[in-house]
Each structure stands twice: as C-alpha cells, then as structure tokens.
Length: 446
Image (tube, rainbow, N blue to C red; front, side, top):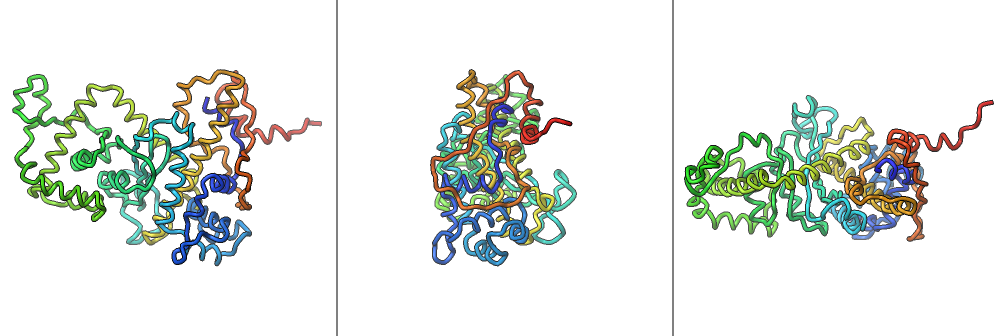
C-alpha cells in the first residue's frame, strides 16, 4: 500500500517543495530582521539560505548553484534573518499545520511523543567538535536530539555532545517547546531512562514511558517490607525512604517552580543533580521518588501488552525519521564542518525545518492519493495507520536549485498520478516509480 501511494505522488524538486509549503503556511514571515522586525524582502533569497543550512551545502555552493542572489546577499540575509529564535518560530508554524492536517490523525495521537538522538560526524579536529563516542564512530561528532509527536511533527531539536547522556535533555522539549501540542505521554529508548527523569516527569504532569534496557536485572521498590509481598519478593530490592522525601519536599517544590517559571533550564538542573554526590539530600530524595514512579511503570509494563506495543511503535517513528534526515543532509559527506556551537545548531535547526516541510508536504499529498485510490477500490483503514509521511524518493534533493517566485493561486495543487495496478508486487511498483520518466520517453528499436 505504501509503495502504491508513493508511486502516485508527483515528482518535485526540493526547492519547489519548500516554496509550496511556504505558500501554505507563510513560514518565511517568521524569519524577521534582527533590528527592524520586518520580514525578508525577497523570500527566495531567504529560502536559499535555509536550503544552505538544511542540505548542508553552505552559502558558497548555493550561490554558485542558483542565480537569484550573490554570496554577499545570501550572507547578509542569513546574518540578519536566520537565527535560533526565528527557526523556532518557523518550526512552530510548520508543526501546528502538521497537527491540523486531517490525514495526520491516522498516524497517531497528538498527545504522545518520542525522542531519539542521531549521530553526525564532524570533519576535522577542534575543541568545539565534540568528543568521540565509540558506540557510533571512532571519529568525533555530535548528536542531534529530536522530539517527534505521534503525528510525525518534529517539534523540537537540540544539538548535544556525542558523549552526553540523553536523559539530561528529555524534559527540555516537553516544557519549553513553542508548538501547540499538548504532550501527555513521552517515550524514549534506554538512553533516556533515569530515576530523576521519572521523578520530574511525574511532578510536571507527564507520563514517562521508556523502553527500559535490561529489564530482567531491574528491581522494584516498596513501602513495606519485601516479605509483605510474597509473589514479588524476589524482585524487590528494598523499601522506599519516605522520610527523606518528606524532609526535602519543600526543596523539590522549589525546583519545580523554577522549572515552570523558566528561571533555570531543565537540562542544567538535571546535569547539576547528576553531578551531586549520592549523599546530597535533594538529589537522593528525587532519586527515591523516581524509584517509586519507575516501580509503578514497570508493573504496568509487565501487565499491559498494549503499552509495550505502543512504546515500540512510537520509538520506531523516531528511528524512521532519521532516514530522511540522513538523506537530506547528504552534502559534504554528511559531516558538520562548522566550528562554533551557534553555526552547528543552525545546521541542526535547518535540517529539522526542511524535514518537517517534507513531512507536511507528504501528508497533504498522501491524503489526496488515498482519496484518488478510493474512487476505484477499497482502501482498508487499518493499513493507513502503518503508512508514514517520511518518504523522499520522489523528491529531487541533488539537482539544480531552481528558485522561482511562489505561486499566488492558494488552492492550486499538483496532479496526482494514476494508481499502479494492484496485481504488481511491491518491487515492481517501486521500479515503476523510479523509472517512470524513462519508460514514457523510450522509443522502439529500429
């Protein structure tokens, strides 16, 4: 089904895709001037700067590939209009539109999200290039930590060190994101599992549902003696120190108030709590509270197969999102060659913005493809829930950058291709999809 639907999507250049999404959402207006607050005079030059970041081309290569602006004009627009605040505002515009798309509701719930880190190698050496993480590569690099909603909307992205613990950055997006998504349950893999994360998620009103690694070696904690629970006694480690939680309850509430007011970044609080010695009262009290929350979650995990299934599905969405991100970030061998953290974060933000635009474009056109296919045959709804808007084979990412003016006709959409014959297999359908232009123009031999 996925192969047939994607074969019906129109073939498009990445520049035309970005211009079409800009016409739907008006996200270029979010990139305001640093001093005057006005939008860019020419949106084409602005989008060329965004493609330079998202495609990892750089301004010099983009200036050589397109003829709409010189390198000086691109550099001036990037310096005055493209920064983290405008990236966040534009991402909010795209994510909100993705959440409002009717077809996006078939992908999942908007109250569920997941997060995952993706490693990008850094070229050369330097203090700002990050440390080596043997789990990914022997070369230095970074991790781009992205939060993805259940409807495939990447509502937050952050550049972190390759050796940094992902558990320190799980809560930043849940508290400080700007999109209109109300997250209630969040999923991570084993890298985000932490007792402090369990405690703070519960206090902030989120349900933390990670995929706990080495579950058979984990132990439960109880209020009473382990002998009070004969069935679970082999799994119980010890009792929870309730007196310690009560003694530092006011300090815990003060930390939560600081987080909600934005006085201190949540990742900095997590880093500070992790660096305290084990004898620190506040850190130990939060650890005891996290053990309580993780015990309750582990019991639910064992009893509820649906919870395990949903966690796996949401984590698979985040893993699948890494594939188009890697395909888009193909230039310069996929390496981040910037030396300052600000420029490195710009690369990550530009990549996330471009991937979000691709997801939004695919979502809208997949809806039209499904409507076209349903005119001739039955399309089961249970199959649509397994289709994702993460395909990129129909998008020309490496061709010439042809930036034209956005079309003024708001209701104009591209033509959907005719559906392939259902008797053909998936592999044949993909071949038809990849070589369709060549098959149309082939002449008979002789």
